[in-house]
Length: 198
Image 1: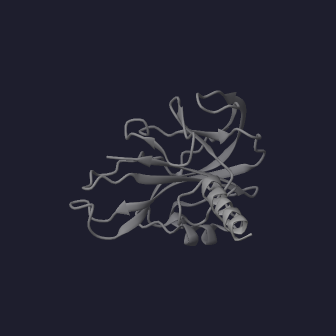
Image 2: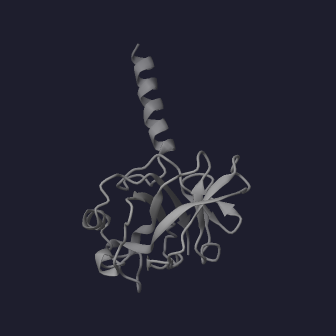
């Protein structure tokens, strides 16, 4: 009986870790996957590794289980950026906002990507901000450190806009303050994260 209970508990914990699309300890935790595609490479599993070169241009985002029918804001956040660029392995880490783009909607099109079994229903936006995409560019660290970059997708109400001053600082970005300021009361509907080494 004890073995069965312990096994069930371990299986539940493992399933929780496997299903999360955000890094361990990241808040908010999100289980529904956002497909993120850089060129022809997709986030097959949480934490898929990419290079700086692969992530230089803004990715295509979408879903592979169902087409979303709302309007969304997409954020790309590095939750563990070094604050000391001269000696990146020392000092505290800070959150860095790499993109915040409003107005994403289902494009009406799908794409197929190696490693993703279903077609991806792409989301597009004619907006480029208020924070234009800046690709990951982590510094070399000793020992090597794979930086995480988290994509979050929030559904937005009709007429939703974000002024640049509502975002605050991009280096030292505070997600909780931002969502409170702009009135995003619901949790993100989708998420994904990648790892990028120097």
